[in-house]
Image (cartoon, rainbow, N blue to C red; front, side, top):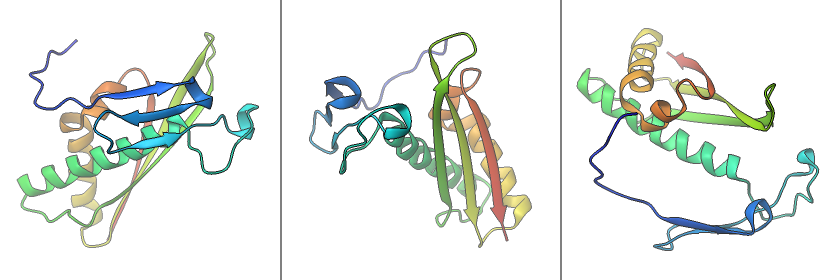
Length: 145
């Protein structure tokens, strides 16, 4: 396990699990939660799921990592659009697991350049990618110019 030197720590608390509420300590994020109908829950309106929150965080973090790597390659990746699809389902060994599909798009960069920086960001920079590696199936689709 890699050790880090923390430069920022986000703190959030969830009450009531998947049918409760979660919020960041600093008030920056707050969400009511509900189990989706597809998982046998009520799927209450105006609620979200942990998978939505994880998808949003991973997409933003990975997009930032791509922009960072782009700058190192003297490429402008500020227009990159990252869509994360996070699926949950039963694991073969019991319990539940996640799978992630990332779609990276930027019509201002060539397919080759975008693939290069997207893969470098995934393999070397993005902390969400580091955390999921070897634990979660992450597939990446890249669409450049």
